[in-house]
Image (cartoon, rainbow, N blue to C red; front, side):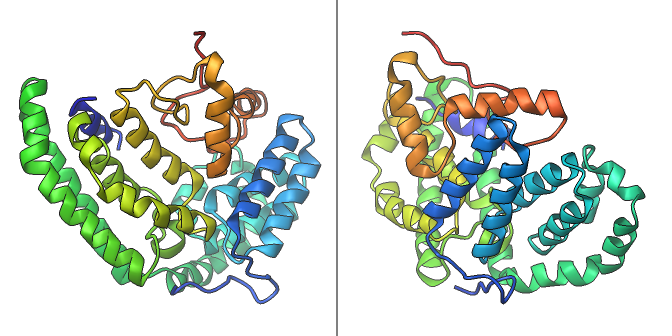
Length: 326
C-alpha cells in the first residue's frame, strides 16, 4: 500500500446529556445498532410501517440518536403520509444538528415546505438549534477542527512529490511525526472527553479522517505502528457508548486492514471489493461494528432508486458494493 492512500483520503475527504427526560439513556449502543439494522431489514422487505415503528423505538429509548437515523425516519414517515411524525423527527433532527439550509435541500421532503408544520418549524428553529449547540462541546469542536485542518495541510505536501518512492519518503519523514503528535492529542482527548465525533462535537468525519490518514501512511510504517493498536480498544468502547458511528469505525479500521495486508485481507467491503468466497467473513466484520450486510446495503440502493428516499449509505462506494468472484 503506497502513499497514494493518504492522497486519496485527502481528496475525498462526558459533557453530553440526554435530549429529553422521557428517555431511558441506554448506553449499550450495540442494541441501538441492532435496532437500526432491524429497521433497515424491514425497509429491505418494504415493510415501511414496521421500519418506522422501530425508528420510533430507537428514539424513545436512547438519549442520543445519530442524525442520519432521524433523517431516514423522517422520510419513512413522509412516505407513509404521516406528516405529523415526519415533522416530529425533523424537529428531533434539528436538535441533533440538522441545519435548516441542508434541510431545505432535501428533495424528498421538500413538499413538506408547503405544510403548516413547516412555518412552525421555521419559527422554532433557532431555539431547537440552540439545544444542539448547548449539547456539543464547542471548545473541543474547534480543537478537533484545527487538528483536521493541520492534517489536510500536511497531507497536501504529498501531492507535490512525484513517484511512490518520493511520496513514501515524505510520508515516513514528514507526515508520520506529525501524525504521531495528532494521535497523542487524540489519546488525551479521549481520556478527558471520549471520542470526539458526532455525539460530542457534532462532526462525524474530522477525527476519523485524521486517524484514517494515520493508518494509510505506508505499508511499511503501518505494519510497525503501535499507536492504532493502542487506541483501537478505546474506539471500540466509544462505539459501544454511541460516541463513534459504525461508519467512522469501519472506515478507520478498513484502512488499517487494507494497508497492512496490501489489500489482500478481508475487510469491510469499502476499500476492497468483497469476494464471494469470503463474503461471510466480510459480513461478520461489518456486523461486529454494527453495520448492515452487503446484501442489505445493495437492497437499500435499489429501494432508493425505487422510492426516491435517501438512506444515507456511506458514499465511499457509489451505489451497490459489487461482490467479486474468487
